[in-house]
Image 1 (cartoon, helix red, strand yellow):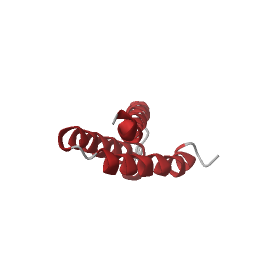
Image 2 (image 1 turned 60 degrees about the vertical axis):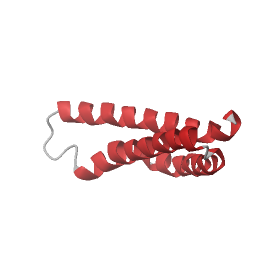
Image 3 (image 1 turned 120 degrees about the vertical axis):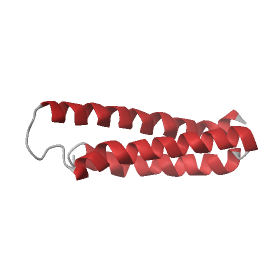
Length: 95
């Protein structure tokens, strides 16, 4: 039972960490008072996308605990983990 929920739990932790790092990056950029930074694309990429994925995975984890959707949420969690490396390629500057 717990093993089938492991991918969604790992996905929520990983995307949550990226959302926290994105918030930290956005606050550091805003503290520099450079005009035009952070722009809306940077906010979307570094903060909104990871935050949305983390909230979605937490909602699915809660639904699986309440309704017993462990198999479906395990598949969605695996997909979320597969989507993370392409996101991190551009997150780190392409290398």
